[in-house]
Image 1 (cartoon, rainbow, N blue to C red):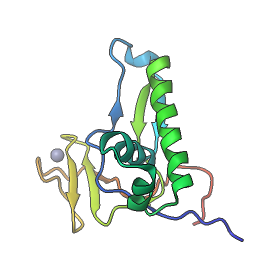
Image 2 (cartoon, rainbow, N blue to C red; image 1 turned 30 degrees about the vertical axis):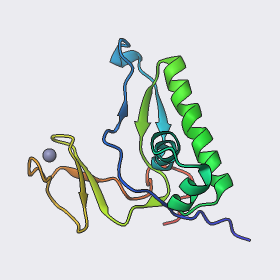
Image 3 (cartoon, rainbow, N blue to C red; image 1 turned 180 degrees about the horizontal axis):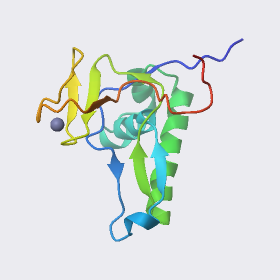
Image 4 (cartoon, rainbow, N blue to C red; image 1 turned 180 degrees about the vertical axis):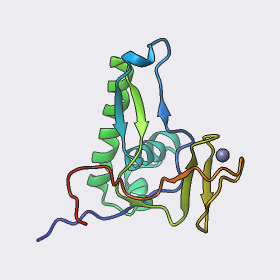
Length: 143
Ligand SMILES: [Zn+2]
């Protein structure tokens, strides 16, 4: 049976692209990549205090899948904290039901029900879609 990845639901984009540790020079900074789904799992369980059962329902995934995402999210956070790495929140396999963008000019996060071409805040056309699956991964390229 083909193992197709189901699209997971995410409620809203993170307010930032990631986190940087304080007091580590940029040139020495390595980063950990956290997927949007891992971020969502952490948000639902540890911020919204939902049970894994309820959180899995919200994301349209099974409870074991949720628990795997959640464990990965916590491991990534722990690794970044302990090793002094940055966290980049990007990519993944999910749907939002909305259009999400980030402005490369003013770094505003834009959430819209319709496609946008310009930033809400600064009107820059330099915006990137956030709610599309990660196309930068070299594996699983099925074009
Ligand atoms: Zn802007």
